[in-house]
Image (cartoon, rainbow, N blue to C red):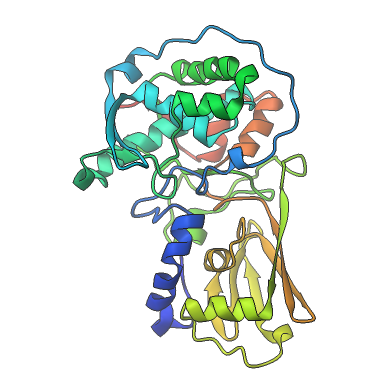
Length: 349
């Protein structure tokens, strides 16, 4: 996370204080060291209530493509066990965990390419080599993963067969294809929903990447839980700040605690001062358990209300935006070209 706080000498303790919260809540990333492919942990879209839809008709389950069958990887499960899977089987579990199966087929295909791309980036990074694995099933670190049994239980008997086939088709139809920039797999991060536009990677993680820049995103009020609120008392805000080691001055009236809120071009909070300590929008999001850094904060009678729009870190592909594009007729290639500026689609190696 980018942290250009005025409390320079307190930066390290603040980050240490937020580490646990970030691991449980947020940007499963140190992206520009070792970013997540997932939106936020736990897999955000499947926690949302989707609009009611007819029970899908069952279809034959497609077989994985040749490229995805030939490549294998070692998955570190949440139980600490390592399993070797074909890329095709692994990607099925990632797409099932990371995107609602009720989404449009073209959005699911785009998600499959993102998941495959991130997997190859992770393989090159060798970040789980000490565990005897290539990637893990924790979305706070890598990508979420669901076994077919767990996915079927989540979907229910009426939908499991059709959704199983639908996701298998998304993986098979994009067999081996990945997003690249200058010939290498990109950090194909994604998130749940945006407030009109995605965010530039530099605004969130402090480093520019040419394919992770802000672009318009078409989703809006039709997204479940698109707007949310978090309400905290003054004592709760004070306690959170103290536990994070901010060293801010909260001795005055609560109405003056939050000052000088600035925004990025996409509308997310760039920085805000809390009792004289400057926080990045992402740091504030973590500190107060907000769904995104696109928020306003108000105070009345010693109670703070954070009004939040969207869900996720905001960088890369918006999943609900991808679904909106698919509904409007865009294919998966067009979706990916929109969200990952200048990236190319190639067979992974």
